[in-house]
Length: 187
Image 1 (tube, rainbow, N blue to C red):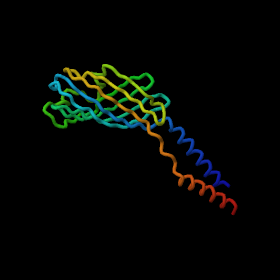
Image 2: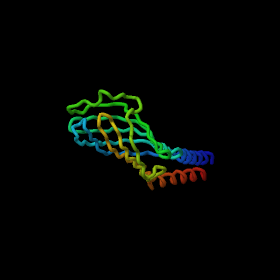
Image 3: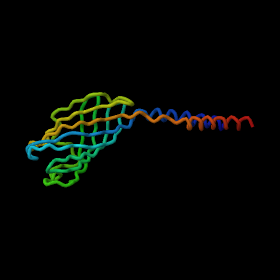
Image 4: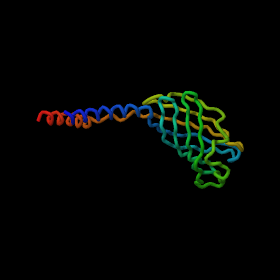
């Protein structure tokens, strides 16, 4: 009886612990956009990237890290970012933590201050969708002024995936443990 109680209490504790962690939900991030301007000969380039993060469903804040690749006819740069998005107040905050030249005629990382909030920020930000729970998709479209006549339009898509259900085998195994405890108790 004592062992059965211990097993039952352990199972109950595991269920409560799993539910308390439900406030933090995994988030995937997809980044796509365009960059253009006089400094790059009036040409247009692409911005692509991806990242991962976590949504605190109690506060509505997404914390994320990402890698963005900006390619134009004269530049190719990879920038690592960490940041937060407040989905309720609809504000963003991010810093670049690394900049790696990927080739191109003009260097792009030289003037970038790493580890500090971005000085040249978004001119406008438009939020759509939601990010309050499982299955939600939040889209942020940001228009940025990078200085020197260069501007960008970037779409950040944050997706909160559906959780993976507990497989039937786990439930079967759990019921077998309870059954074994019951048999042990009878002996």
